[in-house]
Length: 120
Figure (cartoon, rainbow, N blue to C red):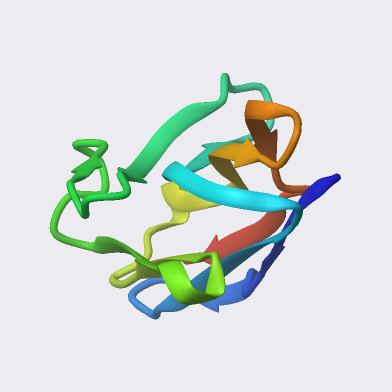
C-alpha cells in the first residue's frame, strides 16, 4: 500500500557530488523518521543519516561534514546530498521510513536501493 522510490545514484569520480532522492507514495497519514542506509559487497548494512519529523538529524561519523540529509514533508520526500565523495562511499544506498498508513497503523518501509559508485 506504500512504496518508496529512490533515484539519483550513478558513477562519479572521487571528489564529486551526487544527490539522492526518495519519494514515498500510497495511503500515507504521516511520516515519522526517514533515513538512508548503505551496503557494500561483503559488508553489513549501515546507517548513513536519519532525519526525524521535527528536523533533528544524525550522521555516521564517516560522512559527517560531507553529507546532508533533508526532507520535503509536502512531497513526502527525503534527500541525501553527498559531497566530496570517496571510493569507500561506494555501495547500494537504501531509503527507510517509518510511516503511519491509513487503516493499517505504523509500518516500516524500505526502498529498492540505488547504486552509488565512486572511482579513484
